[in-house]
Image 1 (cartoon, rainbow, N blue to C red):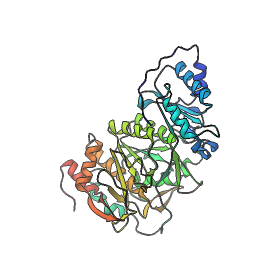
Image 2 (spheres, rainbow, N blue to C red):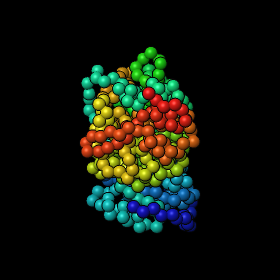
Image 3 (cartoon, one colour):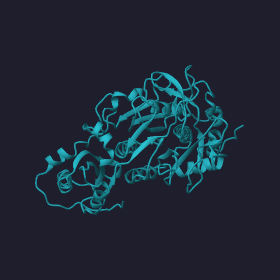
Image 4 (cartoon, rainbow, N blue to C red):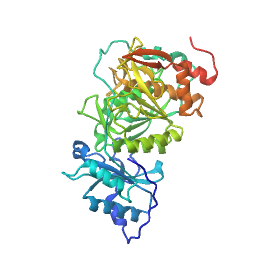
Length: 423
C-alpha cells in the first residue's frame, strides 16, 4: 500500500444528503459504556465480525462534506460496494475513513489494488484482525504479585505513583466499578457494536487496567504499577467466545480508538495485543509518537503477528516468569527487546474479583505503568528518551534462545531524576 497526497477538486451539485447516507459515523465516540456505539452507526455488527475478511478500509483526503459524499457514492457505484462505517480522522488532518463490504465473488486483493490506483482514493487496505496477547488459566494462589518485587516498585513508589498521567488502554472493556479501579478510570469509550452490553464484565481489559493502575493503600486487593495514573478505558476488542479471556479486534475498531486517544491527549498508549502489519494503524501510531505519546505493545509470536511491537518508536515488551526467565523467546528486532513480568500475574478480574493471568499482554501493562511513573516526574521525556532510560537500566535476561532487558522501575526513575540508586 502506498500513500498519496492529493487535493480534492471536483465540480458537483447539492450532494450533502449523500454524505449523510454514506458517512453517518462522523460523531465523537461515546464516553459512556452503556451508550450507543460511537458515531451513531454499528461499528462491528455480527455479520461484520463473521465476514471481516470481506471488507476493505479506504481513506479519502479532507474536503467539504458534499464533495466527500459524492466521492463515497462514486466508489460504491463504481466497485459495487456497501458502506459499513465512515468517520473522520481528526488526528490525520480530517481525512475521511470508510469501511466497505466487498461483494461475494470479488477478490479483496484485486479490489484493494484497483482502489489504490483510483485517483479519488488516498489509501486502501484489507481489514486485519488482532488478538489480545494472553494465555490460559494459572494456579490462582501462586506467586502473588512477584512483579512488584521484580520491578522494585516499593522503592519506585517513594519517588512517583504516576499521578495525573493519562494512560489509554486499547483493549476489551473494563470493570469500572471494581474496588481496585474505582476512581482510576477517568474516561471510557466503546468502539464495538453492542460492546456496551459486556463492557464491565470483560476480563482482559479489566486485568490489564489492574496491572497498570490498581489503587494502593486502600486495604483491598493489589497495587498497580502506577496507582495514581488516570486510565482511558477504550474498548476496541470483543471477547471471542463471549466470556473468555481471549479478545479479538480489527483494523477499524483499533483505528477509531487510537484516533480518539490521540485527540484526548493520552500520554501513554497500551496495546496488550498483536497482529499483522496494518497500514492505517502504522500511520496513526506514528502520529502518536510524533506527538510525544509513548506507545507500549505486547510482543507477538513473530509468525506474522508481531505488530505493533515491531514498529520503530514503539516499546515492544516480552514476558518473564517468576524466576526471571524470558518466556516464549522473541523474534528478531531492529533494537534491543525489553521485558517485564508477564507469567502468573495476580490482577483485577470482573465482578470485583482477582485472578492470575499470563501473557505478554501483562508484561506490556507493567511497562505502561512504569512509563507513567517516569512521566509524572519528567513530563517532557520523549518516547525515545524513555526507551534509552530503559535500555540503560534494564537487567539482561535470557530464555527461548532470545535476550532482553528486564525493566527496573526504580533504577529508571533514579536515572531520570538524578536521584540515588536503588537497593
